[in-house]
Image (cartoon, rainbow, N blue to C red):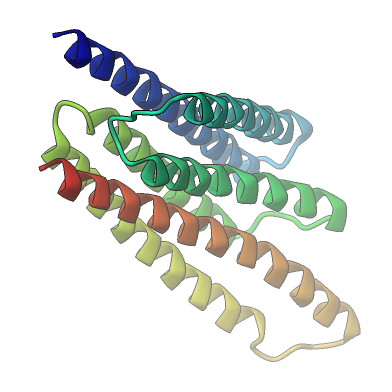
Length: 208
């Protein structure tokens, strides 16, 4: 009974931290979506705030991982899932940062990708929340997150195709190069969300 209770406490600790990290990431993606609708300091600051908050949660998780011998989920899976979730919010921050530095204005493609990324972050958050008691439901959320990643990539390809369709002059080419970099950040965020979804699915297979 003592070992069982110890296992339960460890499980709660790591899953709680992963849930908090996924929640902060979701909130950051919500701020990113708002930024794409209304580019401004307040929304940019919120993305920055949530990126730092998520980083701190990850640092705590890694510290706990280093101090814990027995974990309810494979140590590698805990670390990899945390890293993938962290990458999502990192790319959101770099998107906002570069748009501000390069003076890039939001457009329909950026708005659509940001909305899809927010929806994917929500599915990842729900997936992590359901891992302990409803792994089958967690797997469903992971599948939905992967489907949304595919939609982001579709919009990304459309945006790139439209972007490089008939450059007009040097100024237009410079604008194209700026937008391409921003589009890549969002595409990378989608890739890391897909990786997080894959890890959730892998954890479910090991648990069942």
